[in-house]
Length: 265
Image (cartoon, rainbow, N blue to C red; front, side, top):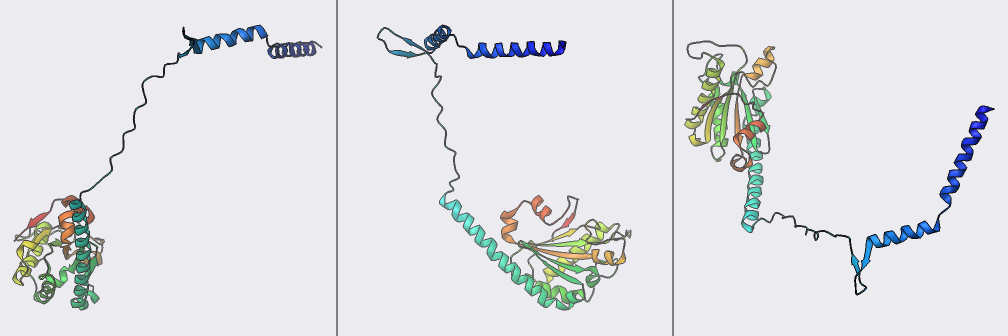
């Protein structure tokens, strides 16, 4: 009974509050309305209404976003560059076809591989095709192969990087204290042979990477066989001139930033 009485008391208080809220005092309402009107507006002597709200500073004008407007010369230069890149891309594709044609027997024997890219061609030659084991002097069978390659490349102006690679088996001879020395000497031998065949020396560079850029697993003999190689990289002139910096080209060629031995004739 006590709980019920408490509930009834609370319910009564609730209805009293609701009734008081619903009953509006007309006099107080008018007083509030007049106060609000005086707060937001006032009349001067001529009876005009003075706005008391400070509108602040005038809105800031929106500045137009400057758009790129290249000059006619810049547009023409870009167009010429695009045309040059496309032209060289076609020439590199044609050169790649020539490599595959003249080197077909060696490609079938997995001694040579031709890899195409929009900006360069990679011609991989296994060291077994070019050198005796542990030697940097070109073997007799290497000369005809390099002559065929020189016949394809000497008529074009593209820069050519000749890269020497070895497996990870150490070498420690008087002539070649390390794989760095062996890979550099082998790349240099190929470069000198190209010069003999009429390729301009200014287009050539010899690079030795030792064992640090393998393409196969050095733990297996088949992998070490693939890693012993000399690679020719024929660069697109437009790519070499405009396309990227040396560091960017190295990144595109998947070359880690390790020191290299470079010899230019």
